[in-house]
Image (cartoon, rainbow, N blue to C red; front, side, top):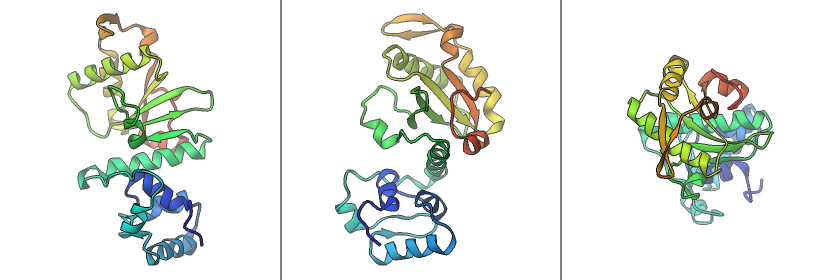
Length: 216
């Protein structure tokens, strides 16, 4: 088994940390084949950790093709793993042009989304995975920042992926502002602008893939 461009190693370069279940899907392996592959990579020193926290070994990190993603703090790992599952869900529906947070940071935008993807129609979608409710002013600030990205034509749509219990509350909060400051002037929040941000439940996104056309 060659380690050159192995999908498991490439994935860990991008995300820093992953689980056996996710890596099994990444490598399109099943059952004992998945276990033996991870065991082989571990024996070669390419990966270290265990079923819940595989990461690149020190030598593999040193010879990685680019900067390796940081290891998330323990409190962030559920969010981190769900973002990986969202990318896999997107792949299963034909969407492969996906940028995770590490790649998004290289864009040097004022607002860094959790992920970016381009759908099959060429629509550029920013993804925010929201597991807990923030204060209203935080969302108003986010809408202002994303309205700026719309104005600069850097993205076409904003997609919030949230637990079912938060769908209606976050949708209402996002639709509440009447105006935002963009490019140093007030812009009214019109219906046309509201149609550029969407809320999708997390179970729906994992089942059908993250998609800005799924309005909730």
